[in-house]
Every structure is written in structure tokens, then in C-alpha cells.
Length: 165
Image (tube, rainbow, N blue to C red; front, side):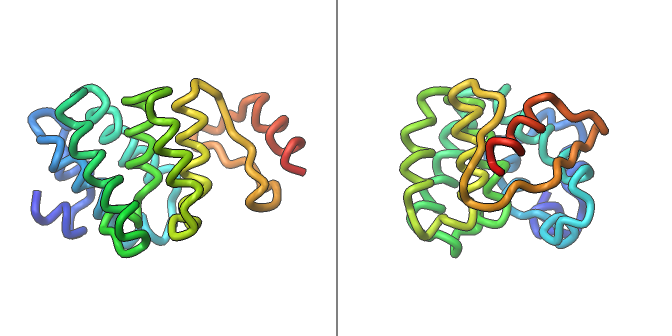
């Protein structure tokens, strides 16, 4: 596991099926993306790599929540200097999926923090998830092209682009 956390092995190699891993190990995988993942060369492989980690954390329930909250505490305290900042979108997604509407106040507070402006789109997305919404539209930037890993777009994608424009 140490090799995976330090980025020498892909996350899926370290995780196997995710079973038997502690919450700390799984949050560690989210906190230490590979260089390829950080560069965003293949967004679909990133989705396939980290979504199962998020799912495993959510299935763990309360034991994982403590580890996720420690990661969020680090981001709030240290901003971009937090080890969890690089892959923050997956950490906040796990938090939103676990806490649902109870996650919203913290996500909103984090979104208002100028030190976390770089992850604002991830926080807005997680806040939407926490409220049971299918999408969020932010005024943070121009409407972009919709990219779907499974090749399927949803009606909300066009509506989101329209609202954003």
C-alpha cells in the first residue's frame, strides 16, 4: 500500500477489489493521485480508478467518515498546502455521498473560503450531490464542452450549458 500511496503503483493495483482496506488507506489513495492522474491525461481512467474508492468509503459508513473529515479539516486549515488538496474532488464527493444534506453547510463554508477557490467547482458539484440534485451550474467560468466517459450525455447537460451561457 505504501507504494500506491506514494504514486508508484496505480490505485486499482493497491486496492484490488477495495475489500479489507482501512478507511485511512482508502482516503490515502484519494490523497495521493499518480502524476498521470494529476495531469488529467485520461479523465475516464481517473473516474474508473477513484469512483470505486469513493464507493468503498461510502459503504464503510461512520468509520470512513472520520477519516474523510480529517482530510476536510486539513484542507480548511492548510488550503492548497494540504496533502488532500490535489485530489480534493473525490474527497468532497465521498463526504457529500455519505452525509447527504448534512454535508451541505460544511461544503458551502468551504466554497466561501478564498484559499479553496481552486476547488470551487468540486465543492459546488459535491454540494449539489449532497442536496440530491443532478447537477449544478456555476458562474465561475464559461460553459464548456460536455465530456461523458460512458459516451452518453444526459438532458441536464444541454440545460446546464444553456443556463451557464
